[in-house]
Length: 502
Image (cartoon, rainbow, N blue to C red; front, top):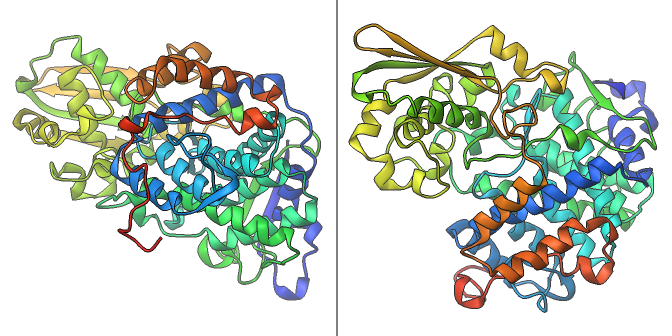
């Protein structure tokens, strides 16, 4: 890896494109021709993981709405749509849109946390859709996914968006564009133009994850995928894009991030080296914001101690700056204590999540967020006794440069009414690579079977798993079958309607 320095240059300096960050990323994408074996295994895990959470969410309202939009854009040589029979195909940008909403809706797939936040699995639906429409092989798709992960995760390591209240799709969209570039074997210049356009169009505020969080949180990655696909299409037709998009006098760094005096360091691998950064990503065992994963496991441990919850005076969660500010009391969001808040808001409330997990000793992607559950008097009482505190120890370990030493956990201190204290600490969630029970292929397969059992048959489960596990060797026809089909009787929103414009 080498450190790519990025700063703002006055227009009179005329920074050559070969020295721009977007060119550096495009060059990596155009030279990615060989996959690392362990990284290839992880790609298959991620494809399985995405399908698992998509099936669990397949009939949820935002997913149905996105699917109905996609159904209005059929294409004879298009891409498959999650849940819909493989003999029907749709324009790839709309398939990417709908499939990504299904993947993102339950907030239960992979994550990577560094200077900023990301769900790099959000890159996969757009790449799969383009691969199906453009008749690419499994190996082509594999390389494209590895490029997308490499770009997004290294941007996340080097450039913090949250500090300036920008949403993390600003790193997602260029990663998808770069991945499509690898997938389609495009030249560096074309990918460069597509990345510039993707960055330019993808900046938005973090209000989508603040206050009353709406279903748009699930739609954001699908929007990023559509943007990237269209940007690549324009670039392939010879259209140019704003440049330098990161370093220019009126660029995103100058006006949307740190300003004209800011400097960022983005780590990038050497051109031609196999991409392995995907191995640093980690999935979720529980349907909740990643920084709550360890909190749920801690709550389970405390639940087994059979504490009389009515005797609790206060619960303090000592954790990192990010956890405190995003899902903790440091966010200063009263909605995080509101029983009538949306599922998306409760998903981003460490206090609610910990209260429910401590009471129940279990977590369920639907039942734990139900209105009955959030309104339970004992839960509301316990919920209001919980607060988070930021500590240097947890913040430093959150940002540790060595992936093996990163910690995304917490120490929970329960103070009882008699003054006695009970504490429980966990450095990382059990399913994390550094956790007590790291996820490997069998756990991904079990997660898929568990979350999809109500939506698809066991025969369909096995058909999809066989394809996903054989991804590097799939021919064009089999890539087009890399989809999960739900019985029509079990699938809501399987026919076009006239409720909207499309």
